[in-house]
Image (cartoon, rainbow, N blue to C red; front, side, top):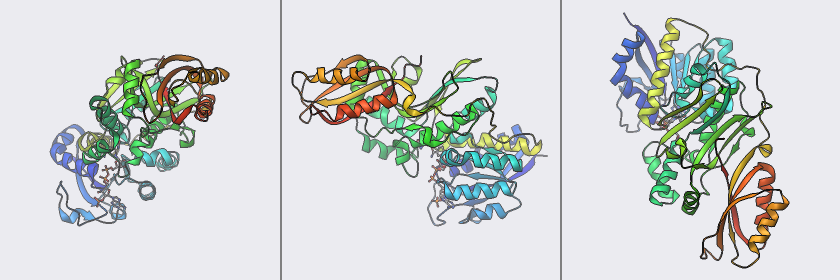
Amino acid sequence: MSRVIGIGLAGFGTVGAGVYKNLLRNGPLLEQRTGARFEVRKIAVRDMAKPRDVQAPAELFTQSADDLLADPAIEVVVELMGGIDIPLAFVRKAIEAGKIVVTGNKALLAEHGAEIFELARDKRVPVFYEAAVAGGIPIIKSVREAFAGNRFEAIHGILNGTSNYILTRMTDEGLEFGPVLAEAQQLGYAEADPALDVNGWDAAHKAIILASLAYGFWIPPRDVLVEGIERVTASDIRFADELGYRIKLLATIKADEAGGIEVRVVPTLIPKAHMLASVGGVFNAVAVRGDVVGEAVFYGRGAGQDPTSSSVLGDLAEAAAFLQSPRQCVGFTSHGLYGRCKPVDRTISKYYLRLGVEDRPGVLAQIAGTLAKADIGILSVIQPEGLVDGSVPLVLTLHDAPYGPMKQTAEALASLPCVKGQPLLLHMETFS
Ligand code: NAP
Ligand code: HSE
């Protein structure tokens, strides 16, 4: 006889409806594998009258997520509402009530993970969140469990499906930003607030979760360098191509020799020959470098209904295992080996700098002089012929430099009379 587990779905949008649909499709298989039969007993939504692509019995629906918490026949709640304040109150109450929590909400965990996992540990209630990072890729379980015997040297990831989809279409078809974003929204990849996808914060939330798991302390969002893809143009993509690179919204997580942790999520030039450069469309990839395992790369769909619900179903299987045989299982364990982030201004990188400059003698010398004064070396220069909006583009790649002085120098260059418009400064990652 299988154990019946009552679940409550808080949210029936792209992911919530996908979980319901795929539970119907593969419930019997899950039952064979876990010895548990999952029964959805309530579904909370905001608008009961909304037409839905996936149908569920009307009597399951409620407009109050608290109804899920009040139902003693619900042992596992699956939070897929999005946002922060309402899910935070809901998750706190669920843990207090002893209900297992499954969530795909990376914004919630990045902002409030420390508090949620402390409460979960006190109450001995597991919180599972595989769907929160990289859609269908089982990276949480891998970092938390499979690599438990490694020190993490670096983790690099393409962690936002929407921005990768946009950059890929810009690269392959020379398209500009706006229409491609609308398409990604249509496909169910984007967040309810798509600004989070393009301004880098959705990927940053995921990077914070991965870095916190890897380094054993909850990374404060204020210590993370985050920039979006909004200012990357089709010409930057062409210049990068000429230099032998692709531009990706890349999460870089690493520890320096003194144990300072760097987390940045910025549009980054990566060599075309690197595996991450060929990750296209909605796909995500995470390259983990551990001191024991060496390099391991994970690749898969990073957003969308089915891949994301695959991760939620995996978490339900974990919940079933816990209910059948309770064990230490709190979702996040802190350890004292690390504990501070490196100040962003002291992090080191190579850079791509695009300027618009006047087309006259001496301009290049002024720019080279300003860089030399800051002790920043030039790796390469491209200056194509032809005016664009009254100036010519000048693209420089620059040797390793600390971010603080580099940013100040870009500002100093912007204030030179020969420089027109706002420079674009991007990181370059060589994975060395
Ligand atoms: P969504 O399509 O906007 O769905 C949100 C669902 O939550 C809707 O059913 C909505 O009700 C319901 N809801 C919102 N506020 C509520 C409230 N106060 N009370 C009750 N129900 C409420 O969002 P989604 O794309 O499925 O994303 C859900 C979560 O998963 C988010 O945290 C997101 O970051 C995360 N996630 C999404 C993806 C993806 O590919 N979409 C991938 C990984 C993780 P109505 O239907 O009535 O509006
Ligand atoms: N909006 C997110 C993305 C969903 O595009 O990656 C998956 O977390």
